[in-house]
Length: 278
Image (cartoon, rainbow, N blue to C red; front, top):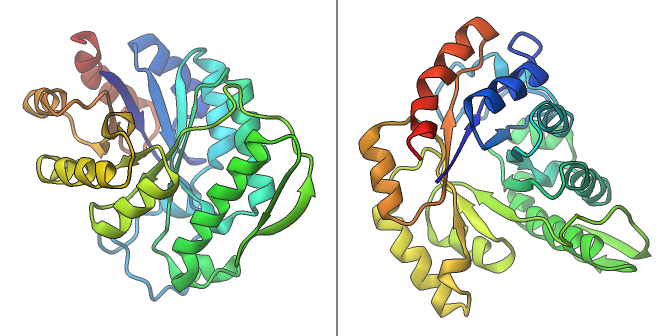
């Protein structure tokens, strides 16, 4: 089982290069960076995990610069977004950024995407909350065209461009796309429509959810075994690790608190015992 971590890196925490070296020294195999471009001061949208919203949401580093820095400090580590708010990006720019990260990491990049919860943040990007799911879908489909074709075009309701050249291409010709979110018919339809797997936030309820996802995959003509399921932002315990292994999970991402090095490194030391037993 691949063991990774996610942590909100900010201007007040351990730096990405130091984190990358610490992960490599302890044998961790992946790192996922979250994303928020900004947090509007006037916000009516309640935070999913409760209020007050932690300060690190508004101080989060750019995920792609962060991932490239971590990867440079820890050669061979797999990096990814957990998650990228794809509806808030220009698809042409996001396709180039993600393909570049994939290229410079030697194909060790996963694109975790999510639909987002902060209506005010989206509005500042010109995104209507009600269209966010459709925008994410079209953004991913458009990027797949740009990643895979020498001359690419796309015409949807929210994303449109005429035949164009765009390089670099991903190292393996494609970038795995994982959709983050809670289990449910709507999310599973999205996974089976245009993604390669699911990132269940917190990792709870998999015993019930995985059979539903796998049955839906079979009905949709997708190979259930081809879908990656990556429990994300979970807290490690021996029983949980064994449970995930029994479910066929091949990667788990531990949540690490947003903090300076002197607080994060002891947590990594503690979590490393789960890496050593694999």
